[in-house]
Each structure stands twice: as structure tokens, then as C-alpha cells.
Length: 294
Image (cartoon, rainbow, N blue to C red; front, top):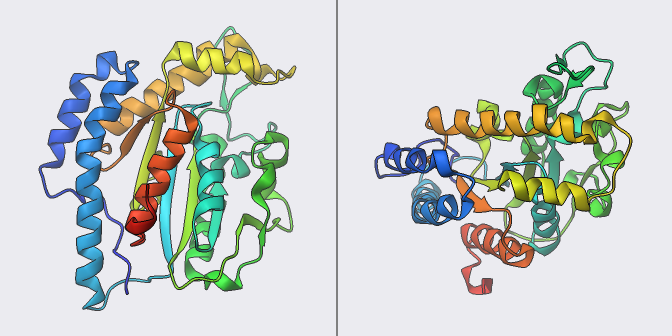
């Protein structure tokens, strides 16, 4: 069985339809349930078309069947890493994980943008703060590898940012997070990042793409529930001037550049178990495991 070639514009219907509808609710997109309900209609078409492509290519020359790539992006505190952990644990095949957080440059690196006044210091909410060339090198290395040949470490500490941020820039690079399983199924590479789909090469490599949303109020509330540190990036002012404006910019960019036509928008305020089950079932369905979905 050959796996379908990832591609943008995978929908057979006019991709502008999805973008037009999302644009219509863009001024109210804090009501994330609107986006979620609208995207379900179109994402079902993505799954169906990907399966058809897989079937057609299995009779031809097809593409490498060793890996399926799932992209998770969206708002900070939206639940991306929790979804990733669930996929790494629940899928009956080898799973591996790469996160943009692992490639965040040191604070002293000159590539960072300056934070807007009256803040001093840097703004780490842009793609310039991530070593994407290093991430793409690792990503391509994984996709070129036989899954069983990879050395993977337990992903249990993914929620501890002190163990994740910048770790892939160490020499030598620590082993990838993931789980080895004996299976005839393709392995699954889970990509996680707050600006993941801004990089067009990453976007084109993903077979499934998910974008988590929250309202500003929900995002602030989750920040108050998280452990606080003295770092300037955890300050309310940094959130107001850097985190939230850059999230709005990223979301608008995806919509305005017609990048949203094959992205599933999910309401990050939904019950975590329900979100996890939604994504898990869709990945299993794409793997041909619909009989295990519930």
C-alpha cells in the first residue's frame, strides 16, 4: 500500500468556498465554535479524498508509505501538546514527535525580533525565533528513515517546557520523542508548533492539519491556571503586545492566503477527552482502522 502524496488544495470542491465562509466569521472568530462546525464539513472531504488518492496510488507508483504526517498548530495554551501526547500513546503503530518549541533559538540570538514598546527585550512569537532550517533537516531525516531504525525516547516530559524549549539545538541532538511499536501500518510523525503552517514546506508535508483556537478571554484564563515564572514572556503585558497580536496575525495570514481550505479548525475550549478522541479517530480512519474508532 502506498501512502497518498500530501498536497494543498486536496478538496475537490472549490477551495475558496471554505475560505470565504471562514472569512465571513473572521470578525467574530473568537466564537470558535463557528469555525469548528464549519470546518467539519470540509475536513470530511479531505479524509475522503486522501483515502481515494491512497487507493489510486497503491495501483501505481505511489509515494513512500512509511510515514503519515499530522500537523498540530494554533493558539498558545490551546492544547496542541496534549493532543500530540494522546496520539503518541494511543496509535497502534510507531509514532514520533517534532515540535517547533524544540528549535526555539536562545534569547541571545540576533534573529529574534525586538518586542514592541514599552516592552524591552525580544518577541519570541514569530517564525524568526525558530531554527526552521534545523527542524526541516530533522523532519526530512525522519521521513527518509525506516521507522524501526529510529531511537525514540519516552515523551512523558513533553508538558515540561524547560525540558523541551531549544532541546533540539543541543549537540549531540537528544533522541526524538516517540514510541516504537511493531506494526505493518505506516508510522505517524506528529508535528506541533505555534507557527507550524506558516512554513509552506511543513504545510505541504502534512497529510492532516489541525488548528486549535481559543478566545482571548479563554487563553488569558488558562494562563492564570498555569505555573507562573519570573520570565518576561509570562507577563500580562507580553501577552497583550506579543502573544495575542501574533496569534491573530497568524490566523489571518492562513485565511487570507487561502491556507485554511484543508485545515481542520478545532475549539480548544472543548472537553480535552472529546478533542483527543476526534483527532485520534480521524488519524485511525486515515490509517484504515475505522473499525477501532468509537
